[in-house]
Amino acid sequence: MAIQLCATNATKSAGSDRRDRSSEIAWDESGAQESSPPEAAGPTSTLTFCAIAEVLASQLPIASLMKRFAEVVSDALDCRNCGLAVRTTKEESVVLNMSRREAKGQRGPWRQVSTPNENGGPVTIHVRSRGTTLVIEDFAKLSPDLFDPILAKEQIASAIVVPLKQSKIDYGSVGLYHDVPRKFSAEEVRFIENACNLLMIAVERSWLDHNLRTANRLQETVLQSMQTVYAVMRTDGQLVDINRAMEVLSGFAREEIIGRYFANLFAIASEVDNIAAVINRVDADAVMLESRMPTKHGEIRQVAWTFAPMTLPNGQRRCLATGVDITTQIAAVERAEVAQREIDKNRDVMLALRAAIDGGDIAQIRREMTEIDKRSKVDHSRSPSADGNIDRKRRSNARLEFSTTKLVAPIIDGKMPSPGDFVSVQCIDLSVGGISFLLPAAPTAPVYLVALGAGADALQLRAEVRNTRRIMHDDQFVFRVGCQFKDRVRHIPSGG
Image (cartoon, rainbow, N blue to C red; front, top):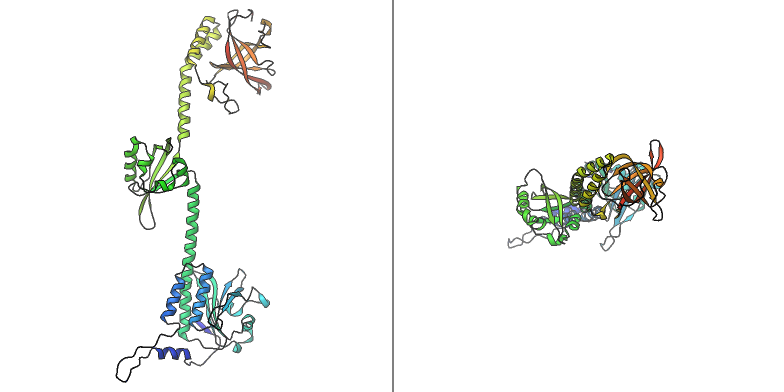
């Protein structure tokens, strides 16, 4: 609905008369039909509609799109000036930008002619156009309360202002201005209103495209930066895309794999048929499996795959494979199983050794230690130290808890201890490679002599101190000393 702020006589404008005459058909004296004159420029001309359609179909940014639109419709209505008023966050406040057509028909640059609350108030007619088209045929005949100082300064005599509103969003308004008073026909008002409605549809489409591109960029960034590998393929397994994590894991660049088949590239020979069958079988539900994946550099990685169907916006079907590299976890489990088997294998020997030590059976102790020597040929190069680091000199066998007392004596400067140097200590644990015991003070020597058994025939072992920790035991601080057995000492003074 349009509101005229200045009443005028319902007379036909010269432009309207010109359009009516251009549609008449002339005949020559011979009765032959003459060709009609070229179509005049105007709101209903084909050229105008084509120009507007070209603007609305362009990929211009929204601000540039709205400015170009205002220029086209301004030329169609033969208005020398056009403007765009953008509402600010403040109520009843706008920013107005204008463009003027120069004498030679060229458009001058857009310039800001007002700011919010300039001269104590907003641009009056643009604020009043909220939701309503305003037609001003002569600003000089308006009441004083509708005086517009900004447009008066620009020597605007008449104007039509159309609101720009779509989906309850107020974008502002577009204004077409003339330097002299003029009438705007009902046809012209309908034209500019309908054109502005098309502009708002184009603006909303542009916003949707912008938001969609932003969402796609965000999704692409997330997919390319995540640690989980993924591959997109057609339903027959032909690869379409992979992410950065898949490039790193497989060693293949994206360009190298496009068009190749997933099963042929990322499965070992014995699993190719199985993987291909899974891909072809993926329909509604996801399928999960583990497989070995060969890399470009000859490695074999263990990957837990999930194959799931996906549908593109155009309706095409795809298969999405997401995977997690579990090679490290599988290797850790295998190492743990090997260690457990080693522990189980030595458990009976260790228990027999403990029984022999507790019973003082020296002959049995020697037999068990000989058996341990045969079965404990272990690699110490990957044994974890107490602080979690790799210590190549530490034991790799798990020690059994061994709560008893034993005799130990320090070996100082290579001198073997006398019987009086031995002290009774609490033994914490014992393994085929070492022993751990408690001392009230820090160790006084780097090597200790440990007596296993009792009496003159006790088996003596030289043990090198590997780590010392101060701990709380029975409500007091003591030192826990971990030692590694080095060799046996067969001749020492008796009486220990």
